[in-house]
Length: 239
Ligand SMILES: *Cc1c(COP(=O)(O)O)cnc(C)c1O
Image (cartoon, rainbow, N blue to C red; front, side):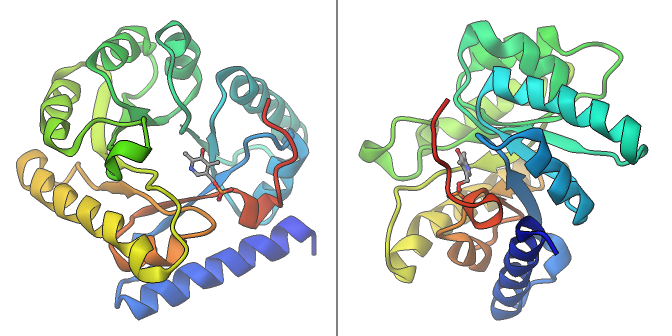
């Protein structure tokens, strides 16, 4: 068994245990494998172990990897439907490759970015799935919209063609103890439940929790956890 396969299984076990603890069905939590800074070979190892959804933070690195993995797969194992999620900060001049190559974007925090993604999403592709990023920890973190501005941005995304509003995403400030980890996730859950009444069953995604805090995120209702280092190992560089 490869190290990646072993670690993937360990993460899946953690997810199931956290679901048990929260009395949630494990099928309600999806694992997004965050492959940033790791090469196509690491992604291919995770695919061989059954993983299908991958998250990338940097546009050029992500697009290169999507292409390399697709090419390797037509050679080796055709027919695996992969899902690529963009989870990094979005500059307005980098929206086109995101709209053309990814199936999901978790980090929409401005209407201008949403509008560009909608305009640039190729007509022959299904709508781009979008989560709005929320600045749930306030001061400390600069990414995401303030909680009281989330509804307005969701309304704007929901009106745009070629985008499908799916939910919310957050990266809370790191915290050591479990109770401190849970607090921002609980606040996200409250916000999510309120907006779900407004946007309906299509609004089904609460993207929160990473290697260090996925248990707290699942206990508070995460439907997608984004896990990098616990699967692929420590990252050695920031490209
Ligand atoms: C890097 C990253 C992750 C994964 O972080 P780990 O701590 O390695 O699990 C998750 N979400 C986002 C937005 C990231 O940038």
